[in-house]
Length: 253
Image 1 (cartoon, rainbow, N blue to C red):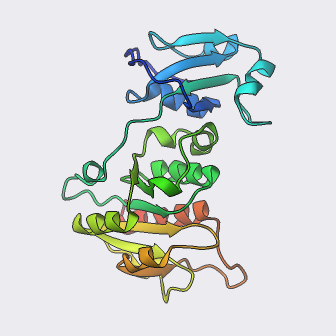
Image 2 (image 1 turned 45 degrees about the vertical axis):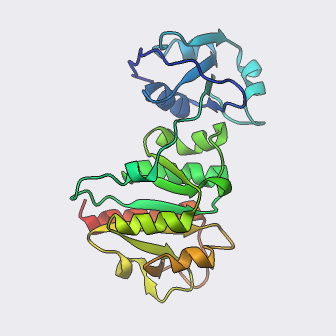
């Protein structure tokens, strides 16, 4: 059950092309986020009765079957659908403006485009308190219901930094004191050997193609996960979870 108490009135949001979040975790987390602007809330009387509806938010009651038209086929909406405006843009410079003793890991995704994978990565990034997730704006999925559902609230917690040029962003990340580790199956050292006790930026490429050569060249070191030779690779969201765990252990948290 949601415990959110936000009553702050959001400004009017543009309604064209706005994402519709569905499922309790995604909707509750969005309602709890003071930076999120809401447009419409649809839901069953039972589910809407469990939450504190923010002032100014339009609520429309609907039956379970009626809500299905707002979500992908067979998607588990759990009686709630929330139309939102995308979050405001986060600048890389702002995300990197951290205290000197803040050594939380940073995630960089090179052309990871599947919304379910990106959503799952946001869920893990939030669980391990990552600084941010950095993607290239032209090669990453937009905010969507499917992504928010997979993120299970993580989209509202971990900043999403979209950049025009990922190689240039990696240069700025290095200037902020991060050791840039690119995960690659053809690396000679393991991730555990590559991690530093300081700031680590974990760079992951798309499944199949992996990181582009230019992105590899902007990493300080390439590293691999010590998986069995019987498996060629892992799903990118699983690889991100393992990498974030290893980086967190290295920090001693």
